[in-house]
Every structure is written in C-alpha cells, then in structure tokens.
Amino acid sequence: MRSALALIRNGLAIIRGGQLRFRLETFGLYFPAPPYRRPLWRVSPRVALLFLRQLPAYGRWVTELRDLERDGPEGWWRARWRDR
Image (tube, rainbow, N blue to C red; front, top):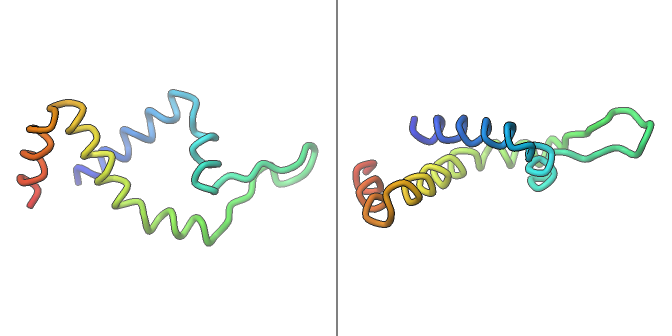
C-alpha cells in the first residue's frame, strides 16, 4: 500500500515538474513520431508489459528513497524492519 501511494505521489511530482515526456522516453514507452506524421506517439506493447511488471519494485524503491531522505539511515532501517 505504501508503494502504491509513493508511486502516485512520484507520478504527480513528475507531471508537475514537466518531466513526464522525458521519463516515458527513458523507460522506452514514448517514441516521438517524425513531424507531421500520425500517431504523435507510439507505445511498444513489450516495453509497456515489462514496465508494468517492474512497477511494484519501482514503488518499493521510491518508498525507500523517501524514507531515507526524510529520516536518514536509521529511519530507513526502522521502516525496512517494520515492513517485515
């Protein structure tokens, strides 16, 4: 549950920061088309499936980073042992 909330917060921060297109290109989910061509963007089904499969691990990683940033190493260890 914490991972899902962290993903939502991270997604909103990416959208507000104007990095959405960059992040989608980084993951290989966004391919800009040549000028005046349709569609404006293309999604690779294989890459989208791989991205969705990695999403829980990415959520846990974002949660750990937030705990580390907020509480330092001791807080990270406390959060890690609390989840077990």
